[in-house]
Amino acid sequence: MIITGITLEIEKIPLRTPFITALRRVDDVENIRICIHTDTPNIGYGAAPATKAITGEDLQSISKTIKKIITPKLVGETFDLPKVLDTLHTCCKSNSSAKAAVDMALYDLAAASNNTTLVEFLGAEPKPLQTAVTISLKSPEEMADDAISAFGRGFEILKVKVGGKDELDTERIVAIREALPEARLLIDANQAWGVDESLEIIKAITPLNIELIEQPVLGSDIQGLKTISQQSGIPILADEAVFTLDDAKKVIKEKAADLINIKLMKCGGISKAIEIIEYCQKQGVKCMMGSMLEGPTSIALTTQLVMAYSDAFSHIDLDSPLLYKKLSTGTGLKFFNNTIELETEEFYSLYILECADNTLYTGIAKEVGKRVEDHNSSPKGAKYTKARRPVKLVYEEKHRSKSAALKREIEVKKMTRPQKEKLIALQK
Image (cartoon, rainbow, N blue to C red):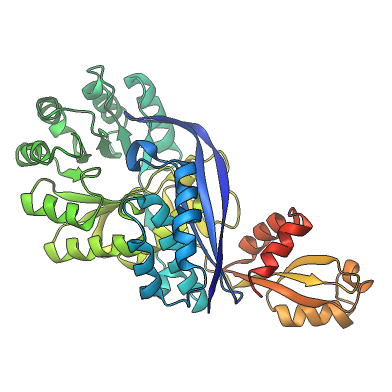
């Protein structure tokens, strides 16, 4: 199997309400979705959002890195997962989000070529997971109302964004706890506090049964984080302090935090996340699997990684799809309140036929060979192809569910003839 190309598209997914933290306000998920093509029907998807405030990358830089640096290194290579992963992660420095998109697409391709889901490829079985749901940074009263609304919709684990720079963070946390005594609360300061402020707030909220506090000080302030961890009665989670395996080793060695937050966009993808997970397991340190505001492709793959290493995680923060105005079909995920499950349907293929009059026909089928026979000789063939026989198969993509194949069919049918020909050429 040879890698023949990497295609990119930009997704813009409206949010139900603005996502507000100490670092930024976001109204839409902006996401680059990539597909790795091969000379077979096997393909692999990955994605990365624009998170300049965290990784320093925007859509333009992610796209440029993938097109100009990564793609030339991978196209033409025989697919061998360890080898292509090594090529990916040594082709340039930094650019963790761009690498993450390609890394997860390579894993997705490896799973597809084995006719399995990613979690099965990693040696485990799908299982339900519970994610925290974000309460955005607003006034104490508004946040309490938002928390009550979320809890009423079945979201029992709430990740509360603080760091308002207005000395109201204690009030925010108290207001939510008083409104919801039974909710599980996680607090995320997004690096907005200093050491003294952190200790003051922690002292005030310790009686409130808070499960953890995430990254109270700047990610670069390891000593400050250590000071807080040593004096806090609430577990401290390192987020921006940990991008790489070396960062995780430093934080754990210094005992600067109780927990490690792993995000694929910070560390560079599934392969790098596995390195951190397995190191933390050896050290007896639990992790959170977090995420940026991401599209469903990367969330689905990250979810499967967590399923494969579920014992390593005490908390999960993969709530992006719950924040969308509308969750589209074909995502591979099912949600019930804050529970995430994986769709486990049978593979379906998108296919393109070249008709006798040189036109192109696009469809989906569970068994493409049989469907092509129908188009050529059976009354079950499509009305369009009956008048244009014989037809021949010129392109096929495997997808993990009928809904995913249907979604892709809509995309391909919107393509121009030259765009379809370019797609077909990737498999010749």
